[in-house]
Every structure is written in structure tokens, then in C-alpha cells.
Image (tube, rainbow, N blue to C red; front, side):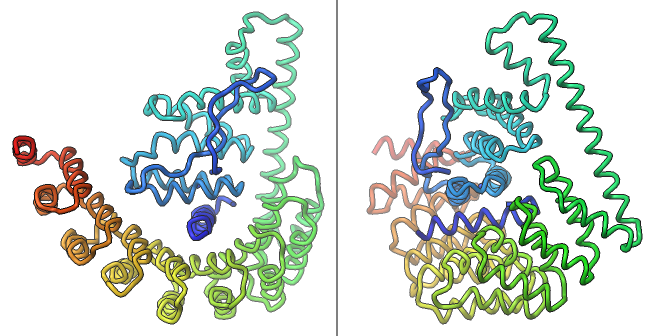
Length: 475
């Protein structure tokens, strides 16, 4: 349960921090043929299979986030995995799963990005487990793009399907479809330009136009409504708040509603705050509640922060929202919120809450936060699970010294913790690390620890290693 919640929360944090909107299932599907003869692509990621890999935590978070249908969040987590751990064993498959997340997201830009990701995977990681599935997924993405008038995608599908020649009438129909698509795109560009121009107008002139735009309900106007909210959100008046509240209550699109909540949360009026607080407490839209909590924590208004802190420690509160509140408090730049989390850590006996606080503060990016988390890994009085969590979160940071990791290795009998430390140390090609790995390989009473130390030594470029390995062989 803890891993699942943490994965979901990580997904929301990455996605909301990127202002992208909203990083995969529990079973694995092989590439087969369905009853209709249409090739299936893998649509559920396997559970993490490299527990000592530095990217394992992010992969698990992405897997759980995609499993919840939070496709933008999953894509953000997979991007973060490649950025932070380019040598991770999950990198090759991460391209496929991000492409799958973007395919399920369904936006034209996402579909186009998905194709590029598949190309990167097939070029750079042709031996990855999902490479064969990627070809099938690419065809499905091209099918979606072709239906939206993308001529190149249609041509690639035709070639793949063995369609060599088309009649003049078919080509003419395709040309007309492309022309209509281009005309619609041009009209949309004009409408968006008009919205941007409204920003330069007096609010008395702009607001009635924006109100009318936000009354539209056809699916094709979603992007237009989103842009209208961005323009409207610059004006914090009772009238604009009333319009945003109407959007929150009545707009059929969840992303449009969430954007309205975001701007309401930035308002300093009592009415807007009460409306957002009511959304946090009572809304059935969990994603919108989390968006509201995120914006309240960033607002730095004392009432807003007090509400988020209340959610973090309220007994009997919604468990997922409580854990999300803990994470966003740790992500904020508010020193009082971080001290609140440290005090909460000291007062709670719940190991899950402790781990969420560790996760939150370690993601904050501040050296003092990581130093506090490292102290939790050092402390032998902490539960083993908590110490492992703390170590996983900080061991890959460069500001954590090798001597500090060696000290923890010497102070613990927890085998799993020692195995992870060996892996983390092996990524640092330093003489002190090689010395320790050779010592473990030669003297540790646990055969599995000796085997792992030898494995990591085998990946080192240190000139002493070859001679040492020959010594082991010739024993």
C-alpha cells in the first residue's frame, strides 16, 4: 500500500511541478494477435525487476501512476528517470512506456512525441524487452494521427499495410481532408491570437468575451477554454472569481476545471479561499483536490498553508490526500512547513507516515533536507524499512560523501541495506570504494555479499581489480 500511494503522489508532484496537468499495470501482456487479427501491443508494465537499480524507485512510481490512468504524470516520471539515472537498466523500456502514456493521453502533440520516443528506443535500445511492442504501438499512434489529417502518418500506414497504389479519387479525398484540417488549424490559431490580444485590453472589454468563450461546451473548444482561463486568471476581481467558480462547478472537462481551481487558489479573497477549501474537503475529483492542495501550498498564504498542514496530520483524513499534502509541504520553499514535517516525524509512530515525510523532504532539493534524511539512515533506532527508504532517497546525491555511506555500511546488519549500499558505492569509481569492495569480496562471511562485491568490481576500470580477481580465481 505504501509503495502504491507513494508512486501516485510522486506522479502528481512531477506533473504539477511542470505545470503539465495531471510516470503501469500489474500484469504483463505479450505481443499476440487478437481475434480480429490486429496486433496487440504491451499495455501493462511488469513490476520492477531491478531492486538495486538507482532508478527503481522512479520506475515503480511511474508504473503505479500509469496504472491509475494519470498519463501525463507517468510521462513526467519516466522523463525524470532518464534524466537522473541515464545508466539505469530501466532506461530502454522507459521510452516505450512514456510513448504508451502519451498515446493514452491522446493529444496530437503527445502522439507526435510518442512516435519520436519510439524512434529513440529502437535506435538506442533495440534489445530492450519492449522493442517488438514498440513497432505495434507506433502503428496505433499513426492510426490516431492519420484520422486527424496527418498525411505522413497515413502514408506510413498505407506502406505498412501493403497499399501500394490508390485511385485518383482516393488521393483527391485525402487532399480535401488535409485542406479542411489545415483550415481548422488556421482558424484555431486566429482564435487563440485573439485571446492573447484580450490581455492588452481593459478588463471591462475582455471579461464578457472570455465569459462567452467559457460557455462553449464542444470538445473542439477545450484548448480555447484553457487559454481563456489563463487570460482570465490574470484579473483577480469578484467578477472573474465568479466566472472561475462557474467553470469549476459546470465545465465538463476535468483539466479545464483543474486550471480554474489553480487560479482561484492564487487569489487572496476570502470567497476564493473558501471555495478552494471546500473543493479540497468535499470534491469527488481526486485529481482536482490534489491540484488545489498543490497550489495552496505554493501560495505562501498562512491560511492556505494551515489548511494543507491540517490535511497532513488530520486523523481519519483521506489517506491519499494526506500523503499528498505531506509531499507538497516538503516540496515548498517554506521553511516553516519543513519544520512542521520534521516535528510531525518526531511525534508519529506510524512507519508509513515517517517514510512519506522522508520521501517528501529528500525530494526538496535542499542540502539541509538531505542531511536530515541521511541522519535517519544513520540512526540505528529507526525501523529498518525507514532507514532503507532514507538511504534510497539520498545515496545517489553527490553532496552525500562516500565516507558517510561507508560509515552506515559498517553500522548496520541489515542485509538489504548493505546490498543497496554496495550498489550505490559501486557507482562511485573512487579508490576508497574499490578498497571496500575488495575487502567485502575477500572477507565478508555472507557468500551473497562477496558475490555482489565481485560483480561490482567487474564493472570497475581500476587497474588493481584485474589482479585482485585473478587472486580470487586462483584461491
